Image (cartoon, rainbow, N blue to C red; front, side, top):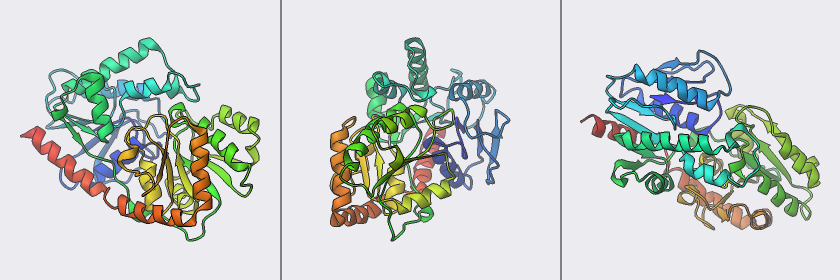
Length: 366
């Protein structure tokens, strides 16, 4: 298995790979090749191809190194790739690829956004090359796993992938890691990377509208840019909007601490412009925390508007502010959303992800 990231490097891909590998290792002879890790204690072999301990690692370099390693890995029974643009030798046959994003879709969402991370930089030539490599990866894979029906649709529409080759296996959540608290602070919370496609500028604008009538509330943004550090343009925008004293940027924090904060927040907000799945939505539901999210990508496959969360249009601060108002003022709504959210998240387990992934391996190997 190849992955561009692994905990403690932040990101949904790393979380997915770690939870999947832990459950696969009793059933397969597993070797994980990755670009980042700290000091993992696992039951399976981890080969750090970069030979470093790091919180973050340049994604394109990770993909290049993975491509070089793949050339020497021919003959393995199954190669499972989580690196979105990995080079693949044509002679390799048993390739399974999990698409956590489709770069073509994300690139389109970033076209009119001001960059706040290296991830956001848009160069026409580089995008064409990445999309072409991603398309080749999809077409040359014997089986594809998509983390949502939305990703499957994007693969078919952008790259003309045979839909029968794509299996949808949603992400999971570890409910036993949650820390729901009976005492909730007046905090609207965002957890995730600081990249333009996450829509954080619209979240700050929405909170500025909301905060005028709710002076006891604050906004907490947990996370950092792909290259590390809090984005100064977001801090500057909060100052321009007059809400800097009520907005806190924590930067990157340990996962355990993030779970605790999630369990104490009034609401999680995911204002993404593009989102393949939105793993933090499930983590919020497991923490009995209401969710506001945008109606994009795979999010509506988890969040049902008015039932287990609130959905709003992307890039719409007014609608987002109104949803925050509803959460703040309606205790019955909060209770209903959290109750249904707990029912929802229990259907998304990593055991199911591993079981369905094993079925794909067996099909590819037969």
